Amino acid sequence: MDKINIERGAENSPTGGKPPVQIGVLGLGRSFLLEHMPVLAQLRDYFRVVALCDVEKPHRDLAAETFPEAHLYRRINDMMDDTEMELLFIALPSAHHERVALAGLRHGFWTITETPMALTYDGAAKMRAASAKARNRLGVCVPEMFAPDFRLACLAAQEKRLGDVYDVRIRSQRWERRSDWQTLGRCGGGMSQREGLVRVVQAVRLMKTPPTQLWSDFKRLASAGDAEDYVRVMLKTHGQVTADVELTGAHLDASDPSFTIRGEHGSFTVMPGASEGTLRFLDPAYKLPRRRSSVQTPPLKTPVDETPMIEEKLSLPESADAVRDYWRAVFDWVRCSKPFPVSLDEITEATRYVQVAKQSSPFA
Image (cartoon, rainbow, N blue to C red; front, side, top):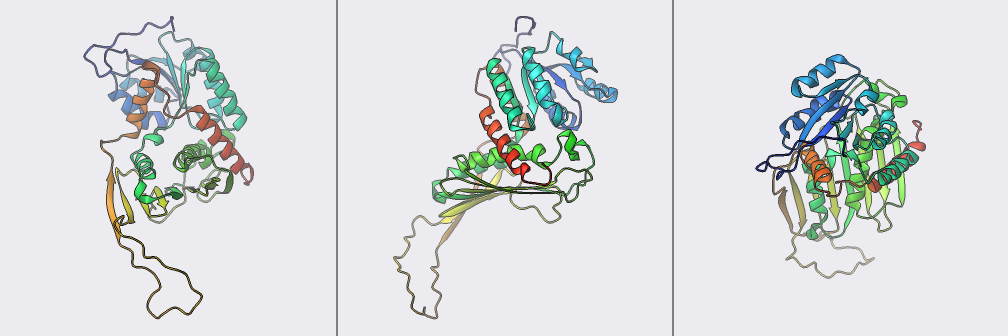
């Protein structure tokens, strides 16, 4: 964009001399202040926050303590005219994502919106088309795709010792009786919109082929609002791979593994946020005895083979920080022309699955 005056990066910087991406942040709520702001403050070689916008002055002032050089705005339209900004990060309530992201693309900005990028499949398809017209400058904030437990699950899904994968289980379980806008349907709240989209993207990635069947169950159990806080979605492919996704804010027991990958010869489990998981598989050196089933009365000894198992730990080769690694990928997208970590095709299709699941529920 020729209207932007970009400072050159230092030749000895981690960016290899590439200038930092100049960001404007729209919406200074808990998501940005607690999750993204600390990371962007550490990545000053990669990003320079030049504009901050929120209707709440205390929130603007708090963000300005970390980014004192940023211009402060109360109105969206005023921020859109900031000539220093080149990337717009949208952290508004979900119902506003589509409208504001389209405006950002029209202004020529690289644009990132938190999930969901739209509340409907038609809206997501419209945004995908607008991005193509704007030279593919739209992305979605999905740090969960860089989480260590998901990265381990992707490695495990390629593990030949597990055999052909037939079952994927994804769990996000906690107790949270919340009463903010995220619990209100009219604001685009609800577990399916807040977290369901990215978990469905993860499920489809691990299944490796698009699903052809879908079953779902939505409930409101602990939330003070009117939107769902329990989502169960099951997907199935032509190849008989099943994905079972459960998201709940009303879980009182100990958490299940966040990802379970089950194959014909073994399984993999990893706990939420962990950088190490467990592989358990049949000993490859053991040859299964040849047996033939029979209708005759079996002998008193057990008819089940005692099959030797091996258990190993699977760890990431390097440390992982989901939010930090996500923003590094954003820099590579903008400055190095690398593909965005999650395609809009993936997000759009996941939006369709979530919409179909929700339409059959009381929360449609």
